[in-house]
Amino acid sequence: MHISVPQTLADPTRLRIIEVLRGGERSVNDIVESVDIDQSGVSRHLRLLQEAGFARVRPEGQKRIYSLCPEPFRDLDAWLSQYRQLWEARLDKFGEALARKRAAKTIAPQKKKSSRRKHHDRKIE
Image (cartoon, rainbow, N blue to C red; front, side, top):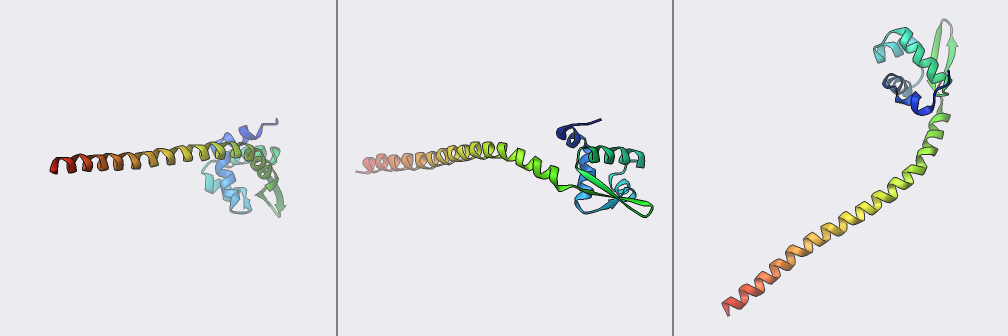
């Protein structure tokens, strides 16, 4: 069974496993302790991560040691960068609009104060 990248990463348990593996290679038992689900569940999620290309396994005696594969994360980052450019452009425009609004608010009270002073000065004369 092949699942898509979004489906692979959408599962909270698989995300926790990825976070554990970010720290380096881990045995299944280490992962089980870190994610607090039974070994069969961890093994199932690790198999799905392998099939999707996010994890690899190597034997070490009786143990199976899992680690992350960097390639799908690079691919994901490249795909997201297209949208990141869009978000950054929109956020830049939003930031500019906020700056203009703040500038207008700071100028408006100063104008009111100066007009009040002029009005007050006229009364004194």
